[in-house]
Length: 120
Image 1: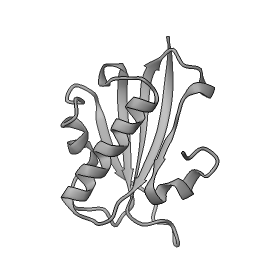
Image 2: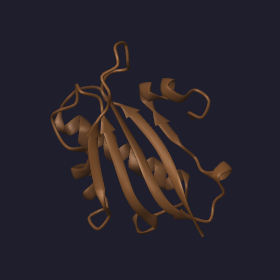
Image 3: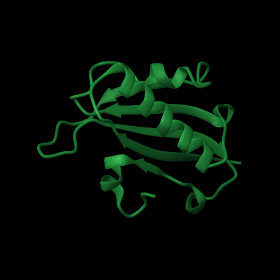
C-alpha cells in the first residue's frame, strides 16, 4: 500500500454556509467513490478556498460525512486577478493500492476549467 495525493475542486453557486456545506460534501463524496476509498483510508485533507468564500469552514462540512478523526485544515487561495470565483480545492492524502496513474482527480461544475486535462 502506498500514500497517494488526490486533488479535487468545485465551484459553488454562492458564498453561503449551505452552498459550502453542499459543495464540500459533493466533492469529497465524489473523490471517495471515484477512488474506491473510505474516510478510514484518508490520512489528512487540505482545503483552500478563494477569498470570496467566507460563510463557513469547508472542514466543518467534511467532519459531518465521516471525517471527525481525520486531520483537516483550510487556507485561503492566492487572490490572483481573473481567477475563477467561489472555488474550493481539496487535496486528500490517502493510503491506496492504486498507482498514481489510476488515481482519479475530481473537478466539478465550473472548476472543471481549472484542469481540463484531467476533469471528468
